[in-house]
Length: 392
Image (cartoon, rainbow, N blue to C red; front, side, top):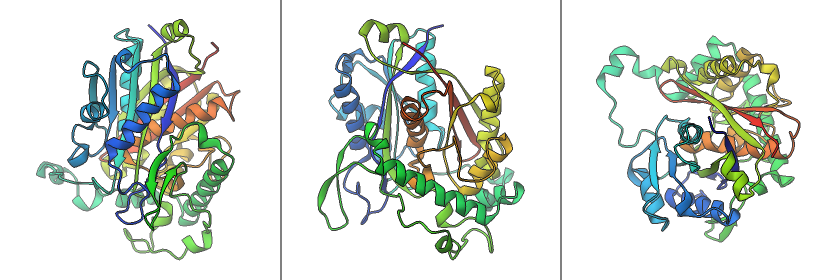
């Protein structure tokens, strides 16, 4: 089989999904995606748009502005009509699924060059927008158990995650994200895109909007628990509504060498799993276990982890069950912060955490042989992908 390497990974900053306060409130989701595609070609001039075999794009809510966003974005951006596109939906892991499909196509020698991406604007296309769920679902599951906040409370109860531990995790997620931002860690991956401040002033957005510099465990302790009386889940320990786009340029290693392009990680494999929808947040447990078993590796073999933080309770349950860590701060998990600070634009996040993993393994974790990115998804999806350092 061929080897699939990451040539480049870029993303927009993650903006707040708010009609009045969001920096990208007047930017459509396909415009964010077009900007990251353009950046890939500008940064890698040896690769032309017409050289791309296909573009796989993950989006959780494919309705409204995001209806067939894979194809319509490519055409709206003026890119070649002859390049195929494929929209992918796996709820939150959609961007990761898009990446895995593209990587597998390369490994099967169906093409040399692919783009994998993810995008979501949770203000313009809200969760559950235009969704009509089959009544059969509610014959199988209690309707009140399926909303994500409710599932996070159930996970907290079953995996015995305390509110304090979730709040400490959120605290460190914001602290690490702020430190990474201030040190310029994200500068290599974030594409500057024009947005607007709350007063309407236009500016180039180069940092994630949701990072809380004044994060306080004491303040989080005063927040209400809307899903369960005296529960664990509050706004402070939940990933916020966000808008953002991310993309990866993937290539057959032989083609990359022929073009003289740089790379430092390759795709080893992925594992998609289904799990019980009322505890959807623990999907990464089973995905990572399956992935490591197939690769004949253990948790100790993985040098760095990117785990999407949908909720503090969910993330801690996964890390504890897998034996990676017990409580924040973590040594090798979300070292530049996670979704509790950076935001979680649903279909974008699966791609975004691979973009960030690529950045981290290029800079701060140069000695890590393996990295894993993993995340849960609504209605009981889990996904994990394994990446290995390679020497050119």
